[in-house]
Length: 161
Image (cartoon, rainbow, N blue to C red; front, side):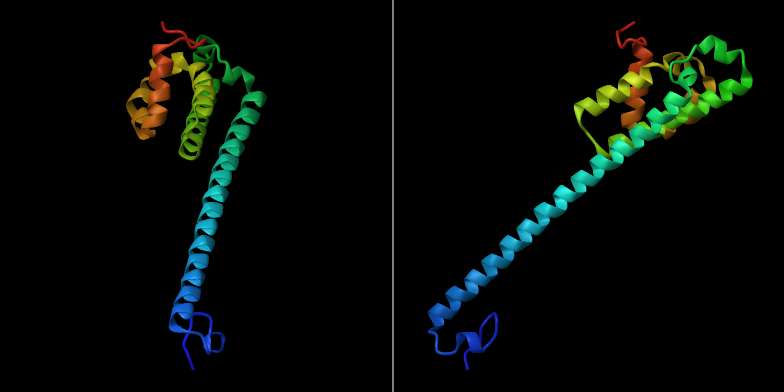
């Protein structure tokens, strides 16, 4: 009996050239299926990354809506209230964590512009809070550090100061 890729019975009575051709077609078919599975996997991974980024940003927006006084702060007023200022520091930390997570999953220009706009609201905090500058800033991913540095260089509206 002749040997073949799919089984011995299928190739009985075939010439060696026909067997090789059929075997090549089966290998090509397997490669195509493999490529298709790889593309589907990459597409699913991209969709999952986008979904995760949206979920993280949605959570931040919910928090910003619930605490609008922290999302667009009056920095001097917050400094005068130590308990509120501590809460504000945690709010900013949450924003920067969200930025780090989103930038890990999504690299698009729109995401970065949107995040920069939100980070810009906390310019005075980044410039004036010595604990943040000395203890926290260096712990963030370079992509988030860039957002903070851009905020310090610009004003709330995004313009250069």
